[in-house]
Image (cartoon, rainbow, N blue to C red; front, side, top):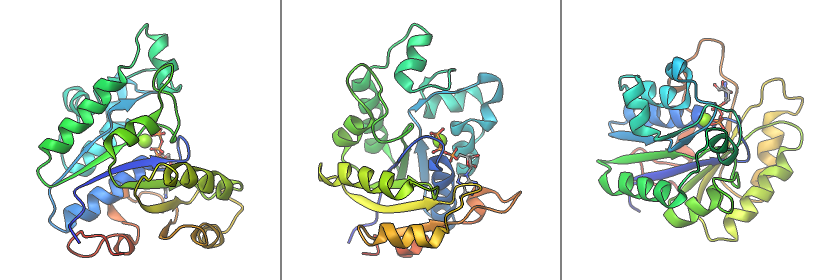
Length: 234
Ligand SMILES: Nc1ncnc2c1ncn2[C@@H]1O[C@H](COP(=O)(O)OP(=O)(O)OP(=O)(O)O)[C@@H](O)[C@H]1O
Ligand SMILES: [Mg+2]
């Protein structure tokens, strides 16, 4: 089986851990000697005064690339200030997202990738990008292998299975579900992982990092998804 060379990282919702997982994957693959690139085409809640804390800032740091307004713009051309769904955040600035241009940007990055490209989505699977299209439409246009990131909060099992169902029904290729432990969750992480795994394998547990850990410093057990050569393990 061929090495995986492009992955789209999506989630059941915003703030569950897409960037954290992306940074972990970047660290994992860089340590394996792979040349990794990453883009996050659309970002809302972006504060130009704090690029380092933004999603592109975190991704650039994990890539070992300089963090600046210019490099953030290069990997995230659509940046909006309001912490709202992208369509609403764009509207607040009197703008609209050209979804075809987002798809073309991603396809260009896929075509030009040197080795491995990670694409972080925005929000959850069906967050609107314009009046009628969502991130799911972008994923369907690209048809890249996906990683679904989800939380471990009470209620996540139904959210995750609903999300997986919408991906499977469209014949999208889900490499793995990663459960990024929700802060203060009352539900044991392992039980959540086991419940989801009864419906769709593989499911990877990503425990909450310890204070001060860099995301790229503690990779999840990615060997269950990728072997040492970066090929799919299943
Ligand atoms: N397993 C984890 N351990 C520790 N912190 C985590 C973990 N997963 C996520 N976080 C933290 O939770 C916060 C939200 O995660 P993250 O930014 O990765 O979410 P996201 O899905 O990328 O959100 P967005 O929709 O804004 O892109 C971040 O501060 C991140 O560092
Ligand atoms: Mg993010």
